[in-house]
Image (cartoon, rainbow, N blue to C red; front, side, top):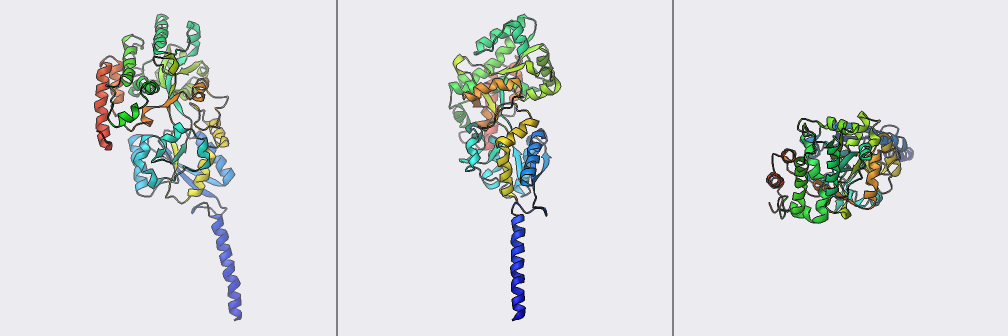
Length: 433
């Protein structure tokens, strides 16, 4: 009997110690002896990590949650890495991956934590939430700032020539005439890097949506095509017009992206249809010129419907089948908090406004980013087509190069692209194709 009395306290002690240890380890199975949890984060190797690492360091100090970052390739190769690791159960706790149509191919309901009812979701803009929503459930948080597609311009030359920001395509063409007459390149073409030839077409989606709000839906179900939609065809016509009027630099087929940014920074070229991500490159290579660079939306045909076509940031997703879901939830919550985004912006200047309501663009931001703010504040932004439809053909850069260099008419280019996307849509198994 006395032995039994001695054993009982021992059993209770073991239970108590086990409970305490479990409490220390509640953040995840890989907690260290001091209760620290280590989260693994997989991201593509082309993304600047400075801002993300700064936030991760703050999370470690605040929550004792350490972040280990590993990288994967970009493009199709990287997509296959993500899909394979999810399929084999070998995915990290956090995944940094595209928002938009590519997300659907990852079966988010099976692989990622549903964040729909997290309180901070109320602070995230609807335009972003749409791009990480599948079957009415939200799976990701923004991993940085938005970007816009528009026309970068040299403000110094604009002032010298007495030009003002155009509100219509006609006004933009008039500015181009004055710039050409002054002996400068009106529109910088860098078609050696053929992806840059797409921007006049892609940045026009805001204007397409103003005329045909349901175009993405009709386009996805094959009830509308580029060539039979006057609004969508107009985007190709703008690309064709810039070439026909002789506004491009003479060597535009041999000019690279980096050379184009140099032309813009030095004022030898005055307009460059481009994504605002170019601002980071200009700031790195020509820091004394960044203040001279502005940006405006690609104009439509009416001064009353000016707005930016926007590209949403990639997103952080939480591995639903990981060992550290609760710690990962703390991580993403902090990242989108005002404190988290402030830390992020201190190391990684935003290339557009944040898509979180209470996150302000810092005063030290690029002047061009500040020019975007009134459009965002007024709700005059619309998503790029790739965020509204999964239909995007692989040959678009080649086709826009042909149209932009006069080798194909706008109509022929649009028809060629319609054939290109048809192959893609059929591969995706979309209805109507």
